Image 1: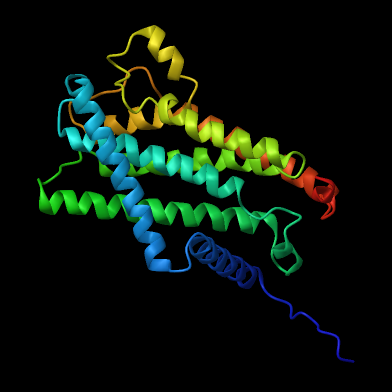
Image 2: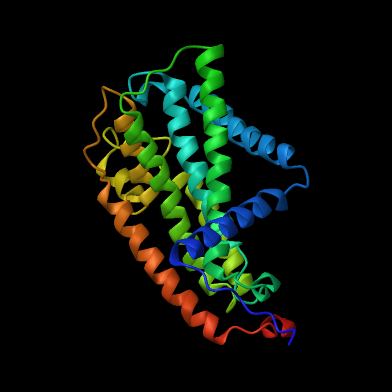
Length: 274
């Protein structure tokens, strides 16, 4: 008599309900790291700004400014830092999203895919806000900037985020089986990308032996291609847009299949023996 009966919804209604749920999960992820939402966003901007300053000082101290792309040097530094931060933050956010054994999954219509989407969107929002604020401040306070193809740069920025999402999904799907190992592996991947992203080198000027050290990394391709869209005088010859797209598709498909397999065997008692 008092049983709750869910009202039937149209396909459009279900789609809007899913989008609304993703929005609330994204907001929850933004507030998870800091109780004050505004302070949390400010901290994201400060992290990106500190990385830009550190890279600028490092380039100047080591005398690497002469190998940079001809154009605004600070814009060259920002192009690598923003895509690197977007990539690693997406890996960290997605790999740390609520899995099938989380208590959040007990609340219908919540599911791991919505959790992944919410975490990914939250990290993207933070990095877009940080990049926008820093670029606007530099443009207004220091010197006007000029980007040759802003749409292409934005596309590479989003592709850096998508590759991070794909890698994070693979790590998340394996996390219930070996949470400690996956946590260590996630940290290693994020730290290795500090160097393996190749944000400090120009692919066209690098020797073949040096390019071979970075060519496997999709982030190396998106950063180099992004600089090609950003600067009029730079045309990437040794990187491609297709490679990170293929890596993203493969990682997303592997992550989805592994997540579906894990969901069938996941149990809340898995971690009790550890």
